[in-house]
Image (cartoon, rainbow, N blue to C red; front, side, top):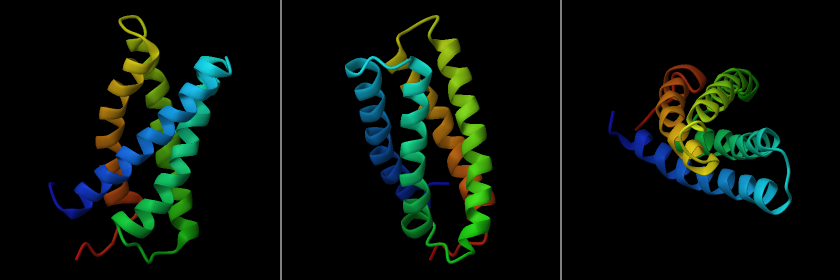
Length: 126
């Protein structure tokens, strides 16, 4: 599993986390938006970046973008629900930012596997 797509997925993921956390911090801590709204906007903002970067950089996909968008939206919807569930469970034990970070570990693995074998299925790694 430690191949070039997994490493590229991680690089894109780090940038995505920075985008996600920046939006979360701005909305929740500075602008005093609701926790779930802040999580949602950060999640979907970084998801747009993720889709484009994984299509062009990570998986070098030349597949039909319309089909990939549909598959990606299915994957992201499940990721979003898992993120909200995990964060709300972990909030009983720690704060929002640590809960979000822990949830990212699970979402990272889920996202990589779903991207490789479902969203961008059939990509050429080499």
